[in-house]
Length: 427
Image (tube, rainbow, N blue to C red):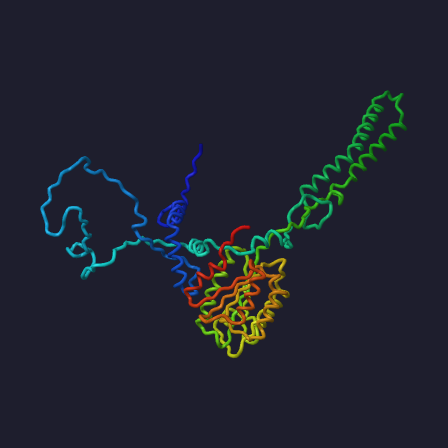
């Protein structure tokens, strides 16, 4: 039996295996601390690690000590405050001058020592996205197999020079030379033996004509053997490539933001945190993730990240302009057969009344057939408006690929995100 000991170095000389055991053992404490950290973090420092504190009493190990054993009789002096069977209260800290703190002692509360340790970026994100999944991701990989990659599939007699297989070509050339030279060498050997036999005869019995014929035949055979090419085009062999279907490993995320006058900077900050969580989540599932920022009021426009989050416009709101622009960008740059398409929209719910029906038509007849997932967050404490009602119809038609939630304040971002991307029960 062989034993393998993992001695990979880690912080403070702790092994990676022991660290994973520790993270697994106190998973509930760490997860609660991570959720609190997500709610209080700023937008720019989402990807760094985190210091997590755990109450020291929760990581203490039980200890056993040997008591005196047997029955004992103890005589204690009497008192005025207690009778037999009474429970003694725990004395308050600091009253006798033995506590470690400064000032006067309180009569309430319980002291708590904390054990603090650091989570790396990957460990922090593992807890942030624990229990989450990308809906419809597996279905895309199993059913939509339009994207292919070239893989080797043996040897072919036809191909381009860049794919020539030198070893196989030389092997074929060697086999051809052996096959073509064999009868010629056999005939040459027979002619040489006949010539030697004729020359060994007595000069009187030699046949000069026969000797001349044999020499001519030997010369002819030697020239034929020498004329056989070392490498012929018939010998060339090429690596044969075939196109094998493969799951798509690239995604594009469309961020749609309402920048009309009703959207305050606080609303945009909430939307930015939600978009950032979604981007980090997609980045963990795909090798390549591209971002497309679309802002709109009455007119939609593709912009960079800076203008997307910090510009502000005035005027009305027409959401269908943004959906139309996203659809045109998909048709021009992101073929659904090659890209996994995700749309995240943040708005305060305001929209021109006659435009909500247009949004419903765009989603139902065009966009939802191309997208992997569409998420809509409404950042408002007020009642839902016409846009929410139109989107609710889409959600009923596409329950697996369309989700919507309401966000009132920044503390709601992470719970709403977890609800939108929670793991669904496997059917």
